[in-house]
Image 1: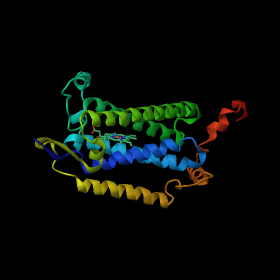
Image 2 (image 1 turned 180 degrees about the horizontal axis):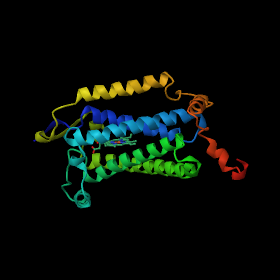
Image 3 (image 1 turned 45 degrees about the vertical axis):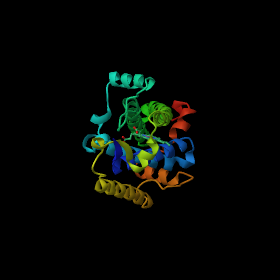
Image 4 (image 1 turned 120 degrees about the horizontal axis):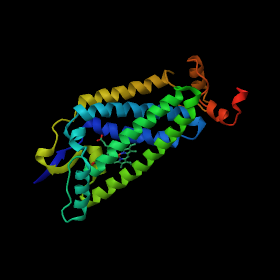
Amino acid sequence: MDKRILVWDFPTRIFHWTLALSFAGAYLTAEAERWRDIHVICGYLMLGMIGFRLVWGLVGSRHARFADFVRGPAAVLRYLRSLLSRSPERHVGHNPAGAIAVVLLLALGLGSGISGWMMFNESGGAQLADVLEDLHETLGNAMLAVVAIHVLGVIVASRLHRENLIAAMVTGYKNGPENEGIHHRHGIIAVILIAALVAFGWSLTQGKLPALYDPGGATMEKLQKEAGHHDHNDRSRRKGKNPHDD
Ligand code: HEM
């Protein structure tokens, strides 16, 4: 008999919606120079949240743990085949196919965050600048594609299994066998996570990180000059320039 059971703890839900928001923010502000600071801040946020999730995947509650949902190709194929049958396999946590998207999203988020951070700090110098920028853009676009597949997968799985997976990622609850539920919301970890997010927001207002809205990019430029860097946007200038001019 199915009951209403807790599946997603608090930290996992906070992680999910913060990650979704920070990705959307970073993607939408990727092109415009005047939104560069927001883009960088969203990138930091994404990296921080993924860092947290990697740890939570090892020590978090049952369905948040990687060991609970990361499966091999055989399990993925079995699940996909079962969708064509009369009794599709049901997983209270992530299903094996959805888990592929989860792992890809974490890996792509990490890759785009790190490549963006390296670009921003001009790690690797001028030689690596073009490679990093191309890599950063490619990873960001790949992530968008996986997000689209992820959201589509969530909608399809919700229909097939006749359950609202989106509501479950908000409330934490699903209907399922009682012994598959988790017993703790992990409220204390959630409070620590929220406190870290507030501290991050507060540090922005103290000018420790680029100002939130800085049309001319002046704060960024000033910070980088102080740190002894060149302008982050040198590359666009460099591109149209003969290297011997330097
Ligand atoms: C409106 C957009 C979105 C919706 C409705 C949505 C919905 C969901 C749902 C329902 C789940 C749980 C799936 C399950 O039951 O197995 C989930 C998991 C997940 N989603 Fe999304 N998602 C959205 C956007 C995103 C975005 C933009 C990202 C990444 C940039 C993302 C990354 C993830 C990750 C990493 C998980 C695994 C959560 C965990 O185990 O910590 N989602 N999403």
